[in-house]
Amino acid sequence: MVLQQAYKAQESRLSRLEKQLDSFMASQTQGRGDIASNSHSAHHVIAREYDVLVEQKVQGLARATAGVAHGEFPNGVPPTLWLMSRICMVLFGPGKPDGETVLAVLGRGRLDQLAPQTARLCEAALNLRRRSAQTGLPCHWDFEIVPGQLIDEEWQEAWPSCERTLPGQFVISPAYVVAEQIYSRQRVFTSIPIPN
Image (tube, rainbow, N blue to C red; front, top):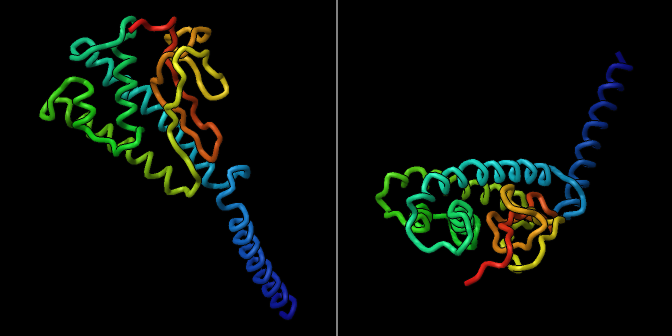
């Protein structure tokens, strides 16, 4: 009986010390981008969801409207890729994602039949942005590119239908960067320089 009580006391003490150690380790690693944490795991999930959103939802919407979209497209640029670029800028640029702005990019009015789809797309992007910010690690979507330069494969990649050895011209989807680490590379339209 005495041994059981001593064992339970030691077990309780060990559990208490483990909790203290976990709290101490969390406080020491919080905000550090060079050490993996639960926040980093959350960003891996967000990055995968972001890639799926771009590859399926954004591309699907752009593809469905590219043939009938109004507006000017740069010479030699497939309308689907140009529209994807503009949609991603609305979804992951500096402002809050807005369905009416996405519709305007597509050359559609706010009462268009695509309004519910664009609203869902914006809500999905806003959800990713919210979850990303809640982790506490510094993060952003990076649209920076120098048109005419070869892509930097460390943080950029050519869109699958583009030739990776040609220079980048514009960003189709931004890089997802967390604590200066690339979680999703920037996807770029590449071609010979586009004449104005």
